[in-house]
Image 1 (cartoon, helix red, strand yellow):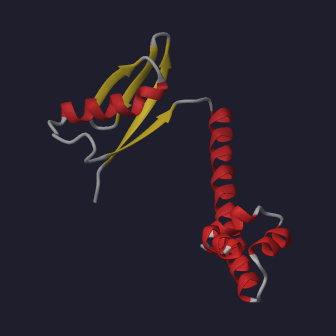
Image 2 (cartoon, helix red, strand yellow):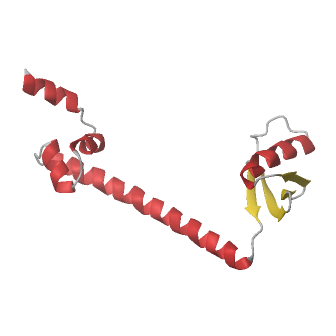
Image 3 (cartoon, rainbow, N blue to C red):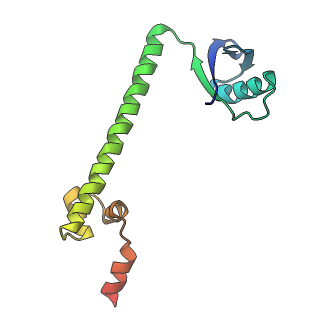
Length: 136
């Protein structure tokens, strides 16, 4: 099991203080650098050779209302990504079934509102082989 270090990032006038739970405090000028700075600090403070041998969870300190809005927005994005994965799986399944039922790639594209190239990707057909036969 990999250790995970919680890093509370607190804003101050010169950047961010990074309070690493159980380790100590360091600083960074930007929040975007917080994870890499925290990793380096943790590895140095604990005399670890590999900065990637543990997980780092950087949590910016925000007022309660903003923190809830961030949590909600992230949850919504995760849910949308899940729904998109499910929809793509259904689309692949339907495209394959349409192909098995005898529809051509172009016909499948029309039925699903996709490009023929996207249908080829979904059902794993190579458009090149069919094209070569029709020209021969």
